[in-house]
Length: 298
Image (cartoon, rainbow, N blue to C red; front, side, top):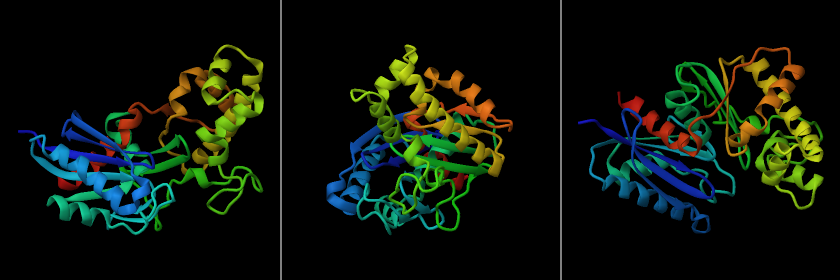
């Protein structure tokens, strides 16, 4: 009988997990809001609750993989740093807690790294050994994969593209710098740009207006796509990955602006790019987390 693995994805608003087969098929799913008001113990309790529900489904489970927001030491399974989106999460010995609670091997990695591994297994990066991923969501994240393994870095911060500086002296960032990419390419940034053009717009209304040929929306998207092109140039120039996978909630709207952006990217950079939209959506993190523990058990 085929063995199953549990892949979980912990974010600031929700925790989701799935029972995933060795072929990548999802047999069952569970999700729950992240109880941030209850602190680290509440978050851990919620995570254990949905894992227990999946365990009760019956199939043999070979291990548990977890992707979490924050900087992670994947060797020790420890959260090195987490923002206030996961209060008290810094220092959580997550792998040890899960192993003690369920008697199964556990692996923990950063959520963007998990998403990148999911895309490498079953998504846009399938068949590639070396690639990068840029995620445009509420914030901006990223990951580097080399020889099919994510690069975490000494402090668990490798691939944090959102905190590369795009505009020196620009918008202040919670990380202590100014002008970080996150403040120009995230969903929140796109909402800000939209409202600047029309006080009634958010990012969704902006994109709808852009698709309809509205010139104000076109001017805003010109700024946004220029910043995205510069970011891609920097990633490609520095890392020379086999591909850059573009994911996250903002990127899911890519059919509306991809063709225009490809033209802008070619104008902005002389480099050769292999840019691919992510395929797995919000399941990428769960799939990649399961894949991580699966490969450790082989």
